[in-house]
Length: 174
Image 1 (cartoon, helix red, strand yellow):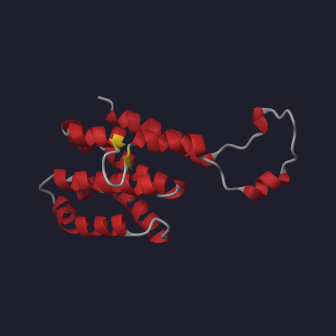
Image 2 (image 1 turned 90 degrees about the vertical axis):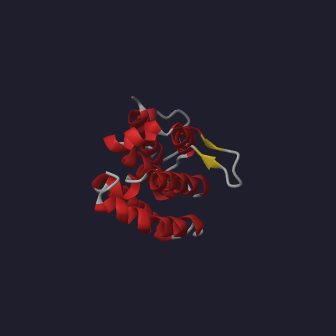
């Protein structure tokens, strides 16, 4: 809803907030909190993030840039915020109307100074490289030469990345 108060607020306030996110070092916990907030806003008030095409484009570019340069947890938090936003039918329509933005979100843009990866590549990397950090649990398990796969603990990051990719594909399908 481009004329809503939320869209107006997003147009006025988000560029500054997004600039802060984009310029912060990737190791700061504040970025994680902001990304979680953006994800909540995406589901409760998407007009704030996508009420205006320019604001929506900037949100997508910054979230993809953050996801492309951070470690797994923040990477997946940025992708989650994007996917949550894309699940909103009106936002999905805006995304489909802008083929350049849709292509950026799907495939990224390797030609920029800072390479931006697409959602599919980000999720695929997390699925392949995702490893739970539960080292204490690993120490408790005895090593076996032939261990049944049912004894392995699930890799939460890889599973979450797969769920995000599935939701992303659903959100971009016509």
